[in-house]
Every structure is written in C-alpha cells, then in structure tokens.
Amino acid sequence: MGLKYLLIILILSPLHLYSQEVKVRKTEKINIPKDGTWALSAAAPDGRSLLITGENMKGLHLLLLKKSTLTTISDAPGSGYEPVFTPDGKKIYYRSDEYRNSRKYSSLEEYEVLSARKRQVEAPARVLVSPALSGTSLNYMIEGKRRHIDSGTGESIKGAEGVYLLLEDLVPVLYVNGRRKELRPNGAGNYIWASLSPDQSKILYNFGGTLTCIADTSGNILRELGRLNAPEWISNNLIVAMNDVDDGHRVISSDICCYSLVSDKLYNLTRSDDIIEMYPLPLSKRNIIACQTSEGELFLIHYRIRKHVK
Image (tube, rainbow, N blue to C red):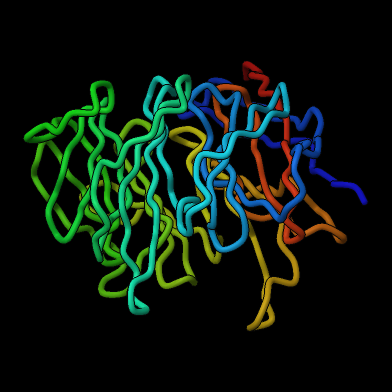
C-alpha cells in the first residue's frame, strides 16, 4: 500500500508580490520499536520527537524520530490527551486519569525529558481543563479555579501575562493579561479543536462537529471552511486538517488537506483509496506533517516551500 500525494500547492502572499509553491518531497512510515495501535499526541518544539499514545488515549510515550527510540512516560488512562511541551522542550505536562466508583478523576503530572524525573503538580480532581502555554507560563483550570505555573521552575505563580486560549465546557475562552473573554462566534453550541494562531490574532475551531471556522479574537468569523476535522495551525496563514467521511458508525475515508487564508483555497495533500489518513500534526520548524491512520500506523509528510516573485 502506498500514499499518493498531490504535489503542488500554490499560496499567494498577503502582499501579492510573490507566490509560494509547496511540494511534497517524500512520505515515510514512522518506525516504532514496539508493536501497538498508535495515535499522535504532540510534537516537540524542535520537531525532532513526538509524543504518541495508545488506543483510547491510554499511555504516553516519547518517540525520538531520528533514533527510533521509544520511552514510556506513563501507562495511565487519559495520559495521551493533549499533553504539552514547554517551549524549550525540556519538560512535558500531561494528565493521568483514574476511576473511583465509576467516576473519573484527573491529576496533572510533570515529566523532565533529560532526567526522566516525574512529579505530581495537581492531585486527582473531578474537573481538569487541559493546560495552555503563554510564554513560559503554563495555564490550566482545575475544579473551576485558574492556576498558573512557571514551566521553567515548576513553581506556582499568581497570574499570567500574555495571551492564551482554554476550552472550558466546550466554549473557547480567551485570556489576555488575566482578562477572561468567552468566544462564541457561531452562537450557543459545542466548540472543539479550538486553538490560537501563532501570532495570537485568530482562533481556529470546529463547531458542533459539522463546521470548521476561523474567527478573530473579537469573535468575528473570518472564514468558514466546511466540514473539516482536527484542524491545526501550520503558520498564521496556513492550516492543516483531515477531510473525513463516515457512515454514521465509523470513518470510511479520510485525507489530509491544507487551507490557505491568503488564497482562500483548500488543497488536498493526500489522495489515498487504500489508507485512511487522520489527525494531522504539524512539525512546522522542519516542514513536516505527521499523521496517523485508521490502522494505528504513523506517517511523516515532508514538504518544501518555494517562493516565486510575480
């Protein structure tokens, strides 16, 4: 079985002085030195390692891409759900779920990459909102209370400067220097896969599982992208997502695609009849997009960008 890729994407610059040509250089299956059904969780800031998890987000493992070495960080349920690297890549923050009398409790854990040292940051609680970074400040909610940690020292701090986005009760909430603002560009409903653009000027989200949108930080919709899932920012003007089709019970086809805000066009990166590619994860500093398949395999899409003066 092979992956078939559309080779060229044309993207106009905001000033329309040049165009960008993006070509897929190669694709490769990631070698994982352990059998299993794998899924992607996060990419290191330098793009040289991945956090991967097992079925139902159970377990968290650090995969060094060049050496193909795998280090188990946790075997706990839920630990593969939205872990976060610190900006320097030296620490990882992740959740760990446990069940008591059929009720889920989640703790927040810290892992130091070089020493493999672990410590519990927050004891198990009923409600833990996945953390978001603002500079070196790690920001999260636990039992309805906002908490902040200096990711360099691991110490609690009173407040966080800067801008970050949390998803609270399926509503995107923007924090700007401590000020809280709920964003509901599409009105009442469930918002998922919400994230802030690298320049912090736009939010990306999926509404109700049926429509992916881009809005500004005032809540004004800038683009409606149709039914795309698992969208991620590659850059301020380029988004990657999966374009999947299901039969009401399971996904029957899916390809990886990119959307350019500059050209206002959607481009397929894969066109596969025999592989269901899902959940893209950009390694932007290395011009690589990782993705997983319905069979639990992981792939890397290498691409290059060329600029052409008009």
